[in-house]
Amino acid sequence: MHMKNNRNGNIELLRFLFANCIVLHHSFLKFMKGGWIGVEFFFIITGFFLCKKLSASADESSRESLKATADAGVLELKKRFFKIFPFFLLSTIFGFIIKCLALDFGTGLKGMVIQAFTLPYDFLFLQNYGYGAPSCTGVVWYLSAMFFAIWIIYPFIRRYWTFFSKYAAPVLAVFITGYLVRTYGMMGSANDWSGVNLNSGFLRAYADISWGCFLYQCSLSSAKYRKNNFAIISGLLEIACYFTVFAYMFVWNPDIGAFDPLAVTALSLGIVLTLSDRSFLSGIFDNRISYALGNFSMVLFMNHAYWTFNIEKISSAYSINLSVPELKASAIILSYLSAFLVLIIVDFIKKAAAGKRKAS
Image 1 (spheres, rainbow, N blue to C red):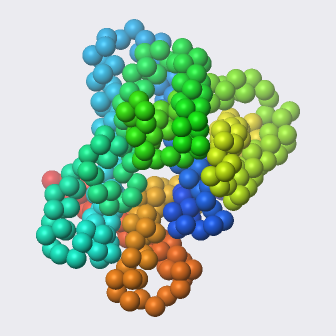
Image 2 (image 1 turned 45 degrees about the vertical axis):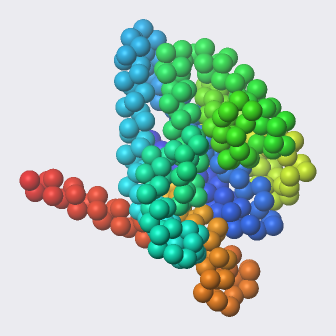
Image 3 (image 1 turned 90 degrees about the vertical axis):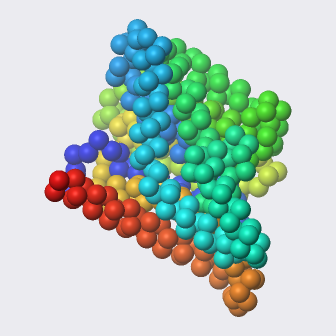
């Protein structure tokens, strides 16, 4: 049954697929060395939906005071922060425990206590600012980069929506992407400090979120074409774009990093086609399962790296006699189990809190 929902089921399913590509990439599997491109997907759709959200009030926002723009930006960050923080808090606690078991902080209690005092750097997403965050989840750099990029970009989108999304955004994305490829030989650098004293993760977020804003403009342009006339062609092209991206992730290695922007271009075209409602594939995954998988992708992303990065250390520390493939498979399974546990606990706490509020 087709369900009325503001969410795009096809995108939610893609969230889940790309989250799994990142999991496989961090499991150090040879056939998914390019799985980091899943991060580009998440940054790009963040920019796309942010630009879409602000388009409705673009004319009014362009005439508001600077204080109103700043207040709106702070509110946007607060909403995003509190939406993910319960999941992130519990995931960080789990990650800290696993890193302790892996003796990542040393064998003594003193080292663990010292590292515990650095946890606020994780909770405030400060890793990419140069603070000594332990990154217990392994993905603090991404959240740090995303929040910082939105903090900087949001006011420009809000006040100069048309100019930014049509002109400034693509220029910013192209220049930063070129800088990343020239400096690091690839787009996927996450935690290197660049010559402009910015973490490369920040630069990726700036480029991709800006690019996502431009893609929203592209999707508006495609709206003038009738769906019935181009549904089959659009659908086939959409499939071809994602097939190209997954194939590239499969064959990726550092020697072909210069082609990363081409793969992201194919990904971008696929995203525009998916979100422009001009394909015969539009709406076919609008169902509860896709929405649930989309929600789960965020929690899986937060709960996989501390297993995939530490499973071999745990095996060595406690003499667990498993082969490397078995350890990698175990890490993936444990990632799913941890994510389910976090999802269940947070959902239980939210329902209990809602029940108390209703009772009072």
